[in-house]
Amino acid sequence: MGKSISGFSKLSKSEKIDWILKTHFSDRKNAKNILIQYWNTDEKLQQLHDEFIENTITNYHLPFGVAPNYLINEKLYTLPMAIEESSVIAAASKAAKFWLNRGGFKTKVISTIKVGQVHLIYHGNFETLKRYFNFIKPQLIKDTNSITKNMEQRGGGIIDIELKNKTKDLKDYYQLHATFETLDAMGANFINSCLEQFAKTFKTEAQKFELFSSEEKNIQIIMSILSNYVPECLVRAEVSCKVEDLNEDKSISPEEFATKFIQAVNIAEIEPYRAVTHNKGIMNGVDAVVLATGNDFRAVEAGVHAYASRHGKYSSLTHAKVDKGIFTFWIEIPLALGTVGGLTNLHPLVKLALEMLGNPNAKELMQIVAVAGLAQNFAALRSLTTTGIQQGHMKMHLMNILNQFNANDNEKATLVEYFKSNIATHNAVVEALENLRR
Ligand code: MEV
Image 1 (tube, rainbow, N blue to C red):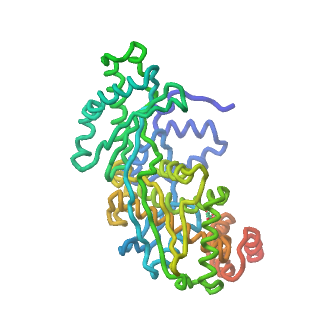
Image 2 (cartoon, rainbow, N blue to C red):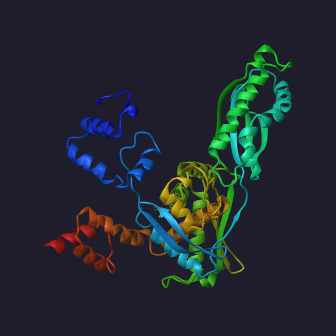
């Protein structure tokens, strides 16, 4: 069993590193070098990163790439993407190019409502609780005035609060279910601050409500927290063109391509095993832009997958059809994103990513991210239904394998050329490298 430590967070950065090295590594010098290798030479910048979280010992780099040529609602964008998977940006760029000449992407924000809940336990009569809720609701709103003032000045704030009776599912369980408009902020802090104030007022004022029995006055607040399920913070992105214009791949007719593509989407609509992988491909694009723009990809992931299960069975986020000779492919996806607050004003690369996108507001960013997801899914399905996925994937992964075996620049150049006309598998690459070195 390893050693435990108390007061770790109070140690200095170098004391933390020393403890880690002593406790977990045999080659301490090498481990220390690796940690230090990733420090930024600009001390102020390093300090900024150190202070994002607790117990920072180094930085974890991901490639930050770009996918140009995204025509979205007649405007051209270059998408910033932070991702480690070899083929994602190549696929994103290819899909952008394909649709650039076919009208580009059309998008629309459907709604921007976010949700937060106070979860509470109340032992008593529901009708009396309802009367108390209706009586106290104006005060719940009023008591959050200092929190909501600025947001309201900009046109956002609390939309509504409802009392929900959940006792059918859990004994004595009720909710204050609140909806919010948080404009360009993702809104987690705003929503949670409002909810905690609702909870305080709701509990305190219950003591004075004359219709409550003494047991009923004793409302127990379990917790107050926003929901990352945002089915009403929804955006749609779409591409469409004449079937005959789906003509880029010489190995398949446009009609056959459209039919196979739609079948692939239909399969993901009805088969959860396929839907999960299908949606994973969508999230390759979504997460990469979400991460590059400093947003919370875990929140997005959780909300998106819950939405994909909203009809009781996990299903595809994208849909496709041919109608009167027109192929249409679209996505509807819930995305709670921010372009102010959080990392957006702090992380230099996030600021740069947002500037690259023309400093979008949250609604624009929702549309851009939805497009990244749709494009990525288009690229994946296009490969899957024609060449197979490995051809493109292994072409991009080739460099990783070569690096794994410390190939030099000459070896890389020779083998990249060789695998333009030969099928790259892990074994084939290793063998080709061995042959070259013989
Ligand atoms: C790989 O990261 C993503 C794919 O598996 C997506 C898909 O199958 O649709 C290629």
